[in-house]
Image 1 (cartoon, rainbow, N blue to C red):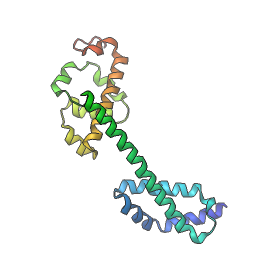
Image 2 (image 1 turned 90 degrees about the vertical axis):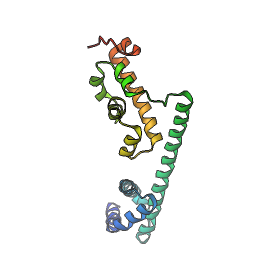
Image 3 (image 1 turned 60 degrees about the vertical axis):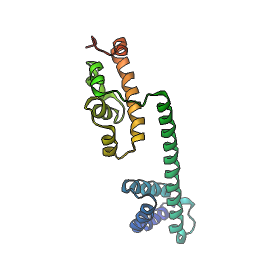
Image 4 (image 1 turned 135 degrees about the vertical axis):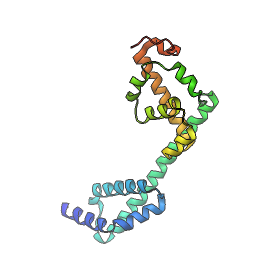
Length: 184
């Protein structure tokens, strides 16, 4: 069984460039091509036992590739729908409006820079670039290769995360704008 799986994988790896082109035509983005191809190969290794006829290995793997691409689009669509719903909610509440950078800096807690690195993912980078350095959201979205709506959602989550970290680290003074921060 192990020998058979090894032979199948060798056969598939010989045609990697053909598979790569197949996926590229469906997704376009090179980083996604690599991810989908890797996921497909992982699935193939995990289910190599289900292949009964070596002659059908290519058809079997193309089926895995198609399913992986479909899974990507399904999950990507769900994420886009969640982001759109969240953005609609922000727009209705008015939370999508960004305060001017000088207003944010005037109320920033003195220990803000100490706490920023503890934020999850690239939240600290977004807050530094947009809120503290005054970069335009359009420029940041373009630089990160994401939509403006996606950036708005991420920035809102980053600000919520920062608020929670400040409240935990600074206590009550963070709730009043930290103009007279005494936490350090």
